[in-house]
Image 1 (cartoon, rainbow, N blue to C red):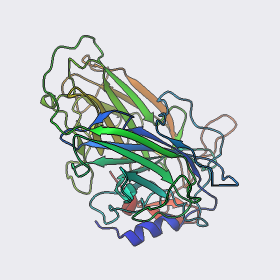
Image 2 (cartoon, rainbow, N blue to C red):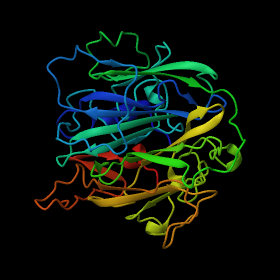
Image 3 (cartoon, helix red, strand yellow):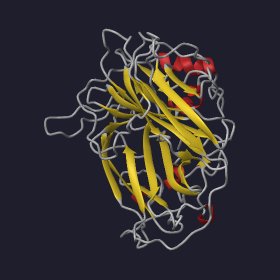
Length: 418
């Protein structure tokens, strides 16, 4: 399946409702400042969250942050309705859920098809790496359909950016479509409409340690879920949302994420991998992810861990993998539309089961996370009634399209994953 760059950018500007998107705050979730990431120079990721706000009267003041703080997984949802709907009036609008597979021609230096104004610079290069971000998701909206938050994720599968080297990454948003290169100073460029988030880190160029020992505690792994957060409304018409979670090994001597235990960084998508399907993760074999509203085979009992496109090493300590970051862009409304939903997430010792029937396994080695959120319905997120329940979702025009206002975004071309 191919998607031309011309069509990809045009699709972000067509068939959209009126309004504006202003990504005023951008935060780099990973890499973290000073961290070592990846193995053999590859298998790491850059994960960005953008918060949207109302337009300001001046775009000349930019805040540069070298140590941007990540939103807590338990932080209160972003509320208040300050986001703005997609627009045809501004080239920086057109934020859409998008799987930018390496199989597509849009996967190249230049604009991100899901966010045309996004810029990512690395270590002084003028190349705009935004076009290499595979996953683009809408992770929080208000009851009127205003986008409040979006995530952008890039998995680095090769050591082309170097190994055993220090790297600095800067990201920000423009009020116009970005190009393949960016040669201006973002601190003085009036087109910059967000802060400039910057982080320096180290790309680990060697193999990960395989030395293991018995764990000192019953639950040596901590799971943080960054999105979806409790109470948020996610996606577009039940699709285009993201599950973004971090696994932290708190017992480095146990070395639970050692390659010898089957853990391996991986990018995995439908376009290139015929084994893209629910089941045990090929990258993080102990992970279990359950959806209480899943309509896939097996329903709520099916382990969905193998649907995560990105599984990256985001922390290395003395050669031991301390962090795995797992990210899944949900490309179809497999869990429903315009309704509450819930995910249950945990890690087991060894290989996880493909299905969970009845009680939870006895070999869980992490906290058990339950996230309750709302799946969007129709082109905009569902309005709530006085009782707080979601209004009835609108209907799509066909199984292969997301309805947005009077137009549509081709779901098969943009983000169909399941």
